[in-house]
Image (tube, rainbow, N blue to C red; front, side, top):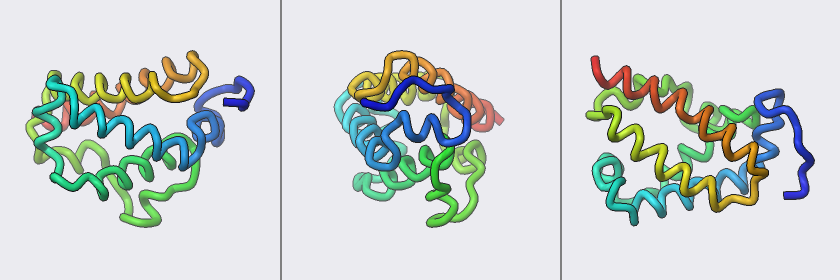
Length: 137
């Protein structure tokens, strides 16, 4: 990427570092490709529909707003409470780690600065942990 280093998490810096919606769409496509291919992800893949078209769009749109860009998820689907939206799934630590593992693989393929890759995975652990906690109840 030609974008210079910046302070992640401030304004839309993270969104821009991720390549805006085009970059996030690529990240999400790679993420779901790993989910389809990796044996470690079979359990979480089964929690998704066979056709991932809407799942891909929802995740890319969520990440857009979450990273400081346009609030595409709420504009298209309404508000979301991430833990509540996943509470009907049996998500424990193993499923959470499988999700993070797929995301780590996808992030590694992106043309992001290395520090941003580390930052992004650290930040993604926060909602992953919240989902795990919500699903334990």
